[in-house]
Image (tube, rainbow, N blue to C red; front, side, top):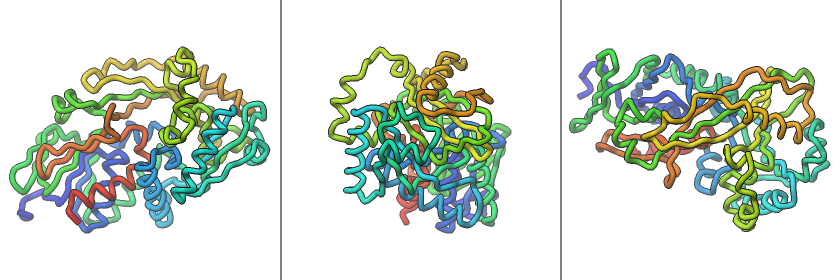
Length: 388
């Protein structure tokens, strides 16, 4: 079987963070791995996000994957610079309800043995001198959490994998057909080239049209559109780590496990602008002093994903800035760039796992958990799929 030309133990279709970490763990298990990416370099969800690696925002199941991801990222960063830094994450509460939620999450963290620290408003201001004291009532800090530069991390990770003689990278190669026959699989590219593998993993993100379109259309998958922007560099202001604010406390899954969450959510006004556009306010500063600010959320079922508008809304951008000014006093609020990101998620399931054949597996729909959860989840999943 292994005498076939272009044969690999594992073929991964999709070079984003989820696919790349499946390749990473397979290589660590001694497999010969091929990674195919339709674009010359990943340009979708993996690079169009904040780069916040925040297990603190996940429910108990995904927090465990995220905590494993922290270990994996740190291990790789110790060997080669993939753009990872450890400056922690902070959730800033703006009112008594949010203070209650961070206190309850802190208690849950203690039970889960995940270190976090409740901070007073004064301690938050000491940590972030440009913080608006009228906004902040207190904070919850996670020292272990990491930040990535999303536009460089995946490329550097793949360069690191390329040092392994068993890693074969095929950027700019669109796989348009897959076939499983007996103990092997075959994939075909748009230009007719064929490769063979013992197993094939499809990590195609929100591309629902190229492979298995009918399957995706019948699933509970949906595409999520996010809008965000980047402010021009601040010369002197420093906002280290991942900064999540009151609306994040009201949105993230981890807080839904808090005793007071349901009653607090029931009091919210359903007709607000932030509710309409699924907005919560995040900050993350890059090494050059620029700040990523956002984001919003819009949804469409997989079968109608192309109905999501390609427009960027000025009123959404303005809301980011108006709310941001309530939280921080920055040197300026000048927009450098703005963009939309798209990822896939399930309505009822936290990830989409489907196996059309014993050796052919689809893995997508990880939602907004990709940067945080992929490394840890992929380790468990690749171990299960390989039976090792």
